[in-house]
Each structure stands twice: as structure tokens, then as C-alpha cells.
Image (tube, rainbow, N blue to C red; front, side, top):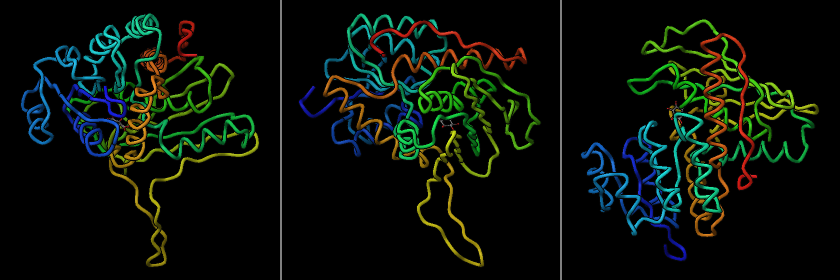
Length: 337
Ligand code: ISE
């Protein structure tokens, strides 16, 4: 690793992986993509040609390489855990897209290995923690500007999903952002969670449940509701309102210009998460690179990845049981405190 440059290997060259390669190559000054791997050879080769990088024949080979200082994991959900474990064992910095693992037990194993290395090595891809709007809301809460926060109303609306989408993904891939951002905003963990059945939308291009209404209760008794529409919405629209004792905070819409025409005022909304949160993806990698170079990561940790997995499991259990379910976590290891 150079003094000011992190050489990155990217595992997974699908939509997210390609976004990351472009950003780490052309936007973030402190990173340079040197290698990629994808089990679909053509996907990897497309990136190799465009960015003139090396490709490996397995993720393990990429992680093993002495030319790779840090690894970005953007492969299929079920492959994340093994790649992360390998990086942690090798004391290599790693950035992992959500979900961290398919089971909470696996996250516990990761935390043990990371703790044995004596410092944080992993940053989770919870990009919203770097979004300007959420950051401002967090600062206002922490400065006591709305008094004690009492509840959060939020919505996560998508226009469409890729083929193969399943009911559980509404939690493990979509609402997982609200699972993370709500506990980050409030600085508290969840006590219990619930999925409530709601009337289903005809605008769903498959046979999964859409929408789903999910609820969290924190240890201090705050309530959070999240409307999750995974398909058929009018835009990619993310809404969040924190209600405090002395006032409320609303996540701003992304548009900066309003148009006045035909006796109406309007402004645009995004059609896709990649546009809506573009700035936050830049910021999360700037901070990741800075964290690696200073040996002090600041973004969401393995503990946060673990918390989101435990919460997702409890939500899926509640959807099946129809009842609220407890969120039971292990004691927080010292390196995450
Ligand atoms: C995607 O992975 C995301 O992170 C988006 O925020 C979410 O809205 C989308 O449905 C997911 O596929």
C-alpha cells in the first residue's frame, strides 16, 4: 500500500460491482482498482477491458494477491460471508455490501476473528450514513435540537426489481437500509420487531409480498414504522421523519431546483438508488480509503452488519408467525464500542 493510495480488488462485477469499480477508479483519488473477479467470466472481462485491470480465476486468489491491499465484496449475497472471513483471517481491509452474511452466527465468527486481529478491518456498505440529509438529521438529534426522539416514520419505495426477487429480499436487501439507519439515528438497539400484513399491490411484477409494513421498537421504547414498496412505485423515493419532543426532522428530497409552470410548482425525484444516493457512495469510499490509510475505519462495522442480520431474522420470523418477535443480540465486543 502506498502512503496515499489503496490498491483495491473488487469481487463481483454485476450492477453494484461496476458502479464501485467506476467510482474507485475515476472518482476517489485515494483508491485504484487493480483486480477484479466474477464467476461470470464475461462480466469480469468487460471490466478488464474498460479499466485495464487484472482478473483472477477465484475470489480467494484475488484476496491472496500481494498487489491487493483491500477488497470490495459486491458479489451474490450468499457468497459474502466466506470472502469476508478470508479477508479477516489474512488481516486485509474489506468493504462488504449488505447483507454481511445469511446467518447471525456467521457474523459472530467474523467478529471473533476481527477482534483477534486487534483492530477493525471491515466496513459495511451502509451508504446512507454518508448521505448529507441523514447526516444533518443525525447531528440535529445528537445536538438535542428536537428534544428526545420518540418515533420515526419512514418509507422505502422502488419502481422495480431485478428478476428473481423474493419476499425475504424486501427485508434482507431493501429494508435493511432502514434497519441500519434508524438504529444509527437513534443510537439505540432494537428490542422487538414486527411485520404487519397489508393490502397487496397489483403493480408487482412477480409473486412476492408487496408492500410490507414493518415496525421496530427500540430498547428505550421508541417506535419506527417502515413502509416497504419493492415494486410499482411512482419513483425511487426514500422518506424519513423523526418525531421528537420539541420538533420533527424530515429527510430532504434529492432535487435542488423547483420548477414553476402552468400554475404549479414541481421538482424531480430519482428513478434509481444509484442516482438518489450517488454522493453518499462517493463519501463512503472516501471515508473507507481514509480509514485504511489512517488504520481507523469509521463507517458501519461488523457489529452493525451483525445487528442488521439479527433484526432481519426476527422480522422474517414475525412475518411467518404474525406476532412481534424479540431481537436478541450477544454482548457488544470491545473493539466496536
Ligand atoms: C438495492 O440493493 C438497494 O440498496 C436499494 O436501496 C434498494 O432500494 C433496492 O431495492 C435494492 O435492490
